[in-house]
Image (cartoon, rainbow, N blue to C red; front, top):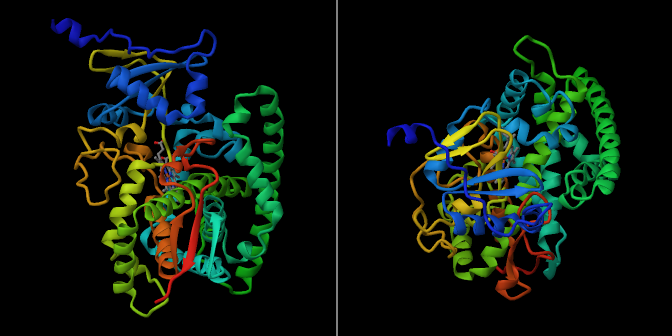
Length: 451
Ligand code: HEM
């Protein structure tokens, strides 16, 4: 009756296979992607599981995603779900800051990626890619996950910190960044002893990074005084102010840099690895994209910002890669107040999750969902295709990420052909860290094209 409908009381169904102490924690950590698929297969739209005492509810389908994305932060909190990142980015940055400050910082981040600034980043990325491939032999074989991770570290630091920093980027910066990354590595997190040691290294690395940024600020101010001009994100951070007119501190600038590196580096690198694997798996589609590039660019060795906007086949290919291999498998929120969805009551204190991985494999939204097919029709709804999330926390680096990956492949495919080193089934979605990637190692063969 209507009274029952107004007051949902059903607890979300718990999926099978919980262990007495840790619930589903081990299975989830092993690889969340197949685990979440199992949740949905077993229970449908709403399922719950136990992550070592933290009750988590997975919501699947356009309607359920919309309900999550429309809920205010005060009810479903991203900040509370992602507190793990606070010591990495630094106190007072993003979710380590009060919401009003966090929103202003996010605005500063987004303003740094406005269209007029993207035009400036395009040639920087292009320069990095050209230098990256300049000394490749005519043929060879390599682990392209490692290759792309290295390349996107270079492009990210170049765009974020500027040419001067990039030119002098040494082992110290790489080491510090690595220590920050290791502190959120799931294997380390699961072992309290290991985590203690990693947390210590993280804090030392984070403090040193603020010092390094402080030195960069001083150097940059000297260069500005000499009349030099800069258009990188670093300068954007130096020029930015909060609503009350105060500037960012060195600690905050370091935090903004680390935040963006974490959001953009592996997501773009891993996506690039999957793009290459899918291209090599589908030579006929690779040939179409190469033909598109050759038609568009002719004899020119330059890929302009304008040209990047005229690659419909490449765009469709990327959309399909991000459908099947969306790097973020889970988008999580902490339930701050009881959350009602249909007949279900999801109690405060637990987490809710939306999974692009599961969403993108729903047969009611995608025909033959497991088939890689860039020519498919994508559903119209705003909550069906979620590689970049949705709602108020939707990715602000979306356009930058696509610009970056397209630039990489526009140069790469003009110069080289690729083929898989292993049988096609070898390359699977694995998740040794927080971000999905292809099997390790991810080796492919390359050969210089004859044009
Ligand atoms: C947020 C995906 C690249 C900056 C997100 C979210 C997703 C996502 C799914 C939402 C997370 C959630 O709701 O919990 C991706 C993918 C990328 C990518 C698939 C590459 C293929 C980038 C890049 C940058 C960036 C290159 C920066 C240059 C951010 C930021 C947020 C975010 C700052 C947080 C927004 C907020 O807190 O409101 N991203 N991202 N991302 N992304 Fe990306």
